[in-house]
Image (tube, rainbow, N blue to C red):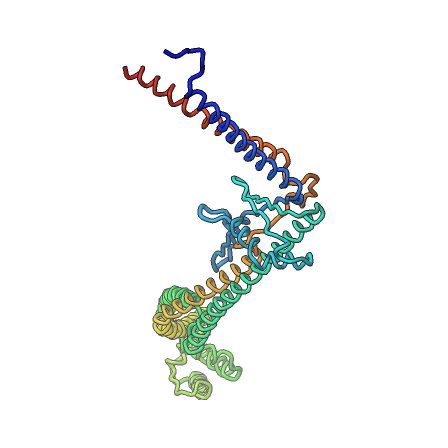
Length: 472
């Protein structure tokens, strides 16, 4: 039986292996940690400092909506909806434009450096805003700020070029559309003008005026007929009363105005009066009765002869009695006023009759013209409607073009600089604290890993024992 106080041969064999193991793990740990810290220190020493300049840009949203009402023509509207739609963000477009080779090359040439040396800026979209941040670095703070300024100027210049190119293309299309609308308007106006020249109708108002005139003439004609009927009735009544027609009354007034006829009439009247007085107490053969009768006959023959000359027709004694206003039978009734009234009524009746005939002719003429113009009205209205539509389209197109020219920021919104490029005071890289913290964390991980590997056998034994107790 061996002495427990003496180390066994197995333990003596394990001692050298144990020390070798310790040495191996220490060597690995020192080497790995040394490499980590060496790399960290070398990075801090050899990496040049980089300064980053920042600037913040704001991309404006759409402009207001504009409506223009054109009296008797139509309405023109233009609106600039927000550029920030549910599926589009102009900042992403500007980000891509800013990172294009053309913008970077121009920026580098402005600073007289290569594109590689100028570098590529970092463009960040700030969520829930209309802003974007641009960061660009350089080994010198002043150069970093100059880079940011030049980049902003180059970006806005490029956007302005794109905006101008879009404006030219849109203006070309707009001019084409405007020319087409103008041609349509010109053709519509020519058709309307030619139709007015070839037809007798110039406007729909002309039909209305014609209808109003016809209605007025009909009313006037009806009133004229009623007035003529009333005057004719008065004329017939008066003519029946005095047993003289209007023509005979005119002849009587003509005889009354003749001086010689009136002298003969006076002689005849005096002879008749004297004869009537003599016949009351003498016979027809008394010398003075015969002489007076002869004087009466001479005066009567003179009257009839003079009346025939004046009136240009043969008169009889009975006609003479009816036409002479101073009654020759001795009744003494003056009929001059009645004759004058009869002549006046006859003149009025003739004038009204002539007026009625003229009105009938004019009415017939206007009705015939209405029959001609009525079918032309529908054609005229159709042509006028075509002109109005063409005018509305042309005016609306022209107005929209003018309004759209006042909003050049539709597709490419305006870029506003919110924060000027900053002049950095501290370098953004390398960051010593971050590098040292990373080296420390690396050393800690390596050391922890080696320790776990060193205790793996003991941990395995303990783990198996725990499992057996749990499963037992």
